[in-house]
Structure formats: structure tokens, C-alpha cells
Image 1 (tube, rainbow, N blue to C red):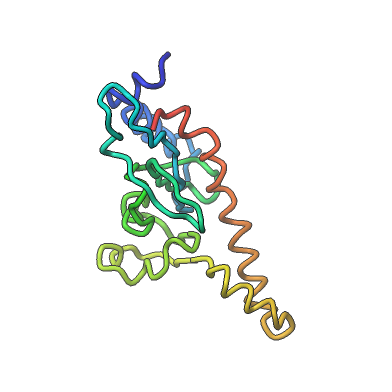
Image 2 (cartoon, one colour):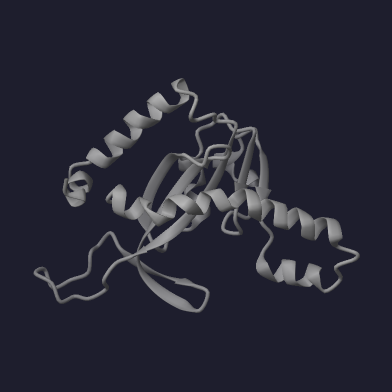
Length: 182
């Protein structure tokens, strides 16, 4: 089956939603908590194509010191099983935090996210979410904590625990762009 045809005709989304309706009934998706994240899906920035222009849905963004052109895939993953329960795509320059509400199912007791979601619980569009937010500290903050490991032992350990829980959300990115024709 051609994966691009699935994406062009919206069939990937329909298949995804149909499977996700069945998963809770089968006991595979537990909906206790969510892990949320986003990744950049690279696209060619070249204008050497039939239209002579870049794809208007793609944009450039800077991550660290590197520029990327393409789009972002935002996902929500069941914390216990690692099964993806929601996803959306945007242009690459869209901030992760703007899509947080779209990748939550609404029944979460807790949410784990990386440093791309600072202050999520304070945003108007997410105030209705009654869950404990566990947002990773920024790398600079973690480095500062590690300068005094005996004093900050508990906070450092907490960050390592957050990272170990969040690791599950990275697994779908290995295959999602290919299998879902994002």
C-alpha cells in the first residue's frame, strides 16, 4: 500500500482513530496518564520542483544552533503502554506548547513533557486539564543543579526519573513518519 496515498486522502487519520476507539475496550490503552512530545520531520527546502516553490505548509525553525525545514509531528502517548493515542502535525515553526491541548485525551491523572512545554498548566486553553504536570527542567537548570550534587540530590534524581518515564514517548517517532504518512 502506498503510504503517500493514505496521507493524501486522509485515510491514515481515519485508520488511526478507528484503532484508538478499539484499544481501550481491549485493555491496551489505559488512559491514566500521557506523555507528550514533538519532533521535526525534515523536508527538502529546494525550489527545484515542478511548481518552482517550497511547500507552503512547511516552514523553517531553529533547534539548538541548527536550522531545519519541514513540519512537526506532535503526539500524545499512553504512559503505561506507550501506545500513541493522539497526534497532530503543524509547520515546523509552531511551538510545541500550542499543540498540547490537541494531544491530550482529557482523562489524564498525570502528564509528562519535555522542556518544550514550560508553564503548560497555566495556559488558558489547558486550565481545564485536571492533571499533575511533570515538565522537565531546562538543560541549563539541570547543569546548575549538578554543580552542587549533595545539596540538589533530590531534584537531580527527580529529573532523572522524569526522563526515564518520558523515554517511552520517543519510541513512536522512529516509525510514525513512515507508517502514518505524516
